Length: 243
Ligand code: GEK
Image (cartoon, rainbow, N blue to C red; front, side, top):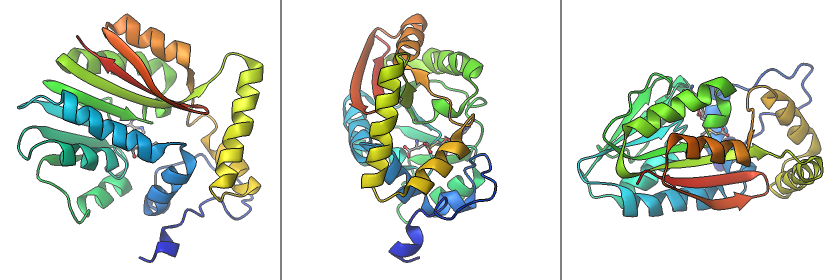
């Protein structure tokens, strides 16, 4: 496939009907380009995940990458930990995504690619769990139960990495961040029509929480240290440590 074929053009033509966004084959084929141009700081988020892996992954433990898409976070983690030191379980319920992960030219033995709903994944002996831009796709009332399952499966000293698009309670801040985020996407080469059609497709599919909701949930669960290590416009990433 040429670089041009990898370019995200999913919403570049006027659509008579904008359907709900799906992680199907069309999206999987261009996903690397789509996420890199849509999430401010995406490559930095991956670097941070690699950095955390070097510090927090415990020998003999397991690492979970939940909603792994094309497995970028798992590949970065595998690069940071010694071969055989831990098992990385990369989970996504999109067959198209997992199929592409399995075809990856360098798929280390330490990674198990799993096509599964993350609500069914049994978490245990985990020193690191990654939810990099995934929780926002779960129905809101299923987020706390998933996070509780994760918290209970994390070893003392282990971590959760939670990156999300966020909403703002304050109307001025909300409007400003939407304006800046649309401006960011334009700098990344998306047209006004692409931005607006994608926004419509994600309506009710990606439902963001506020920063307060995220922090409150992580505190309620009992994470002893919670740090917001990244914010770019309306995207944040937390490092939560189970002490
Ligand atoms: C990255 N983490 O590149 N079970 C399993 N997978 C799910 C579920 C579910 N219930 N719901 C959504 N997904 C990645 C990027 S993308 C973020 C994550 C984005 C999967 C979905 O199929 C998709 O691959 C991923 O979560 C979200 O570091 O597209 O904004």
